[in-house]
Amino acid sequence: MTGKVWFVGAGPGDPELLTVKGRRLLEEAGAILYAGSLVDRAATLFAPPGCEIRDSKDMTLEEMSAWLLDQTARHATVVRLQTGDPGLYGALVEMTRPLTAAGIEWTVVPGRSTVRSAVPGVSSAFASAAAAGETLTLPEVTQTVILTRVAGRTPMPPGEELEALAAHRSTLCIFLSITLLHEVQRALRAAGWAEDAPILVVQKASWPGEEKIVRGTLADIKQRCQAEKIASQAMIVASPALGAADWPTLARSKLYDPAFAHRFRK
Image 1 (spheres, rainbow, N blue to C red):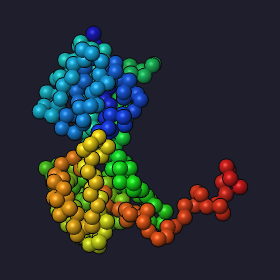
Image 2: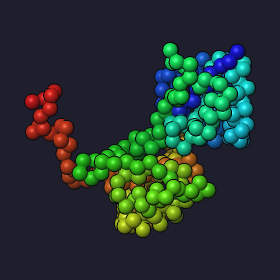
Image 3: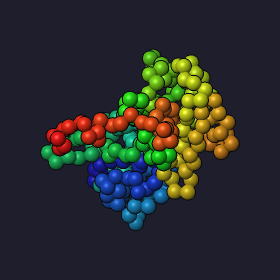
Image 4: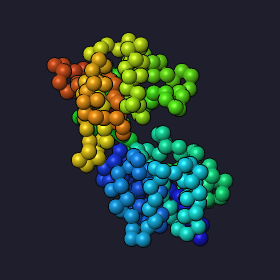
C-alpha cells in the first residue's frame, strides 16, 4: 500500500472550527500526526477506532517525516493535523519536500497524480478577533491587515522588521511573540504609536474553557498579560480599529449607504 498524506489545518483550537473536508479526512484516517503543543487533543476525537494517533510535540522534523512515510506504507489516508492554517508558520514546505522526494502523494485530484495542496484552517488571527468582538478592518481607519511575528530565534527578512511594518499604522496580527511582548512594545513605539494605542491579546482563542482575552494599551499590555499569567499560545493584535464598537461615531460603509448604488440596489 502507498497511502497519501493530507495536511489539515486544525484551526485555532475549537474542533468545531475544522473545515467539513478536514473533519471527513480525520474520520477516514488510518494515522494522524497532530501538533500537540498547539492543537487541542479534542481535535482528534473524529478519528476512527484503531487509528494510529501520534503527538508531534517531542519530534524533530526528520522524525516527523519518517513517521509520515512509514504510515503511508500501511494506511491509505494519513493526516498531518496542524495548528491554524498550514500556510502560516507551519513548516509546510519542509515537511512536504521529503514526501515528494519519496514519490508520496500528499493529496489527490482526479486526473492528476500529484497535487501539492492542503486543507486550510481558520487562523488564530481571525478567531482572536471574533472572540473579542473586534473587526480587523474599518472604513477610513484601516483597510490592511498584516500577519507577522517578532524576530526571535527565527530572524525576520530585511524590510520585514516589526518597526517597519508598524509604520503603516494598519492592523497588525502578531504571531508567536507573546514572550517577546517587550519587543512588540519597543517596535510600535519606534514606529510612532501612542502610549494609549489599544492592544488586544487573546490566548487559546476558541479553546473551550481555556480562552483568555486581555485588553490594554501599548503602555500597560505587558503588565496586564503578566497579571493573567499569559506566556504562550497567544495572538497579539495592534490596530487603530480596536474598540470601534464603543466610538461615538463611525464612517459609514459605502456598501450599505442608501446613496451608493450597485447592480443589486439602485
